[in-house]
Length: 139
Image (cartoon, rainbow, N blue to C red):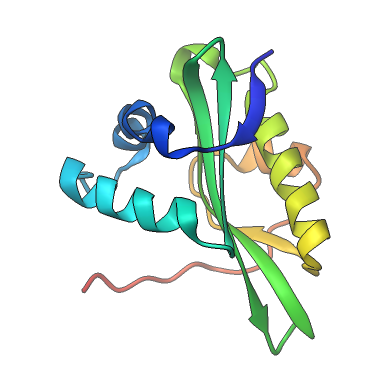
């Protein structure tokens, strides 16, 4: 089982291929990815986790926490989570989510939320429940 750990600056170029494979609505551009990654890895309200298998990144999770009115405090949001296709079914995604949930608890979050259209069974198996409809407007 890979080690789940916080991403470091040196992981940037090893995460990019996974982000490319994950994206469906947009095509990640290397320069924009580098700029975003550098800002996110340094931010205090962001958690980037990687599944590191002997120096090879086989999965990652990008999540945030922020204050809300509706939850009387912080909530955490998983923006992206993916595991390399040939490594799915090994518990890596579950381990990434578990580590993020632990971070959310330490941060004082009241819930963890996410939007998905591809992995309902995975999230239901982890104890998540469908709660809302996701809307978006491309700008």
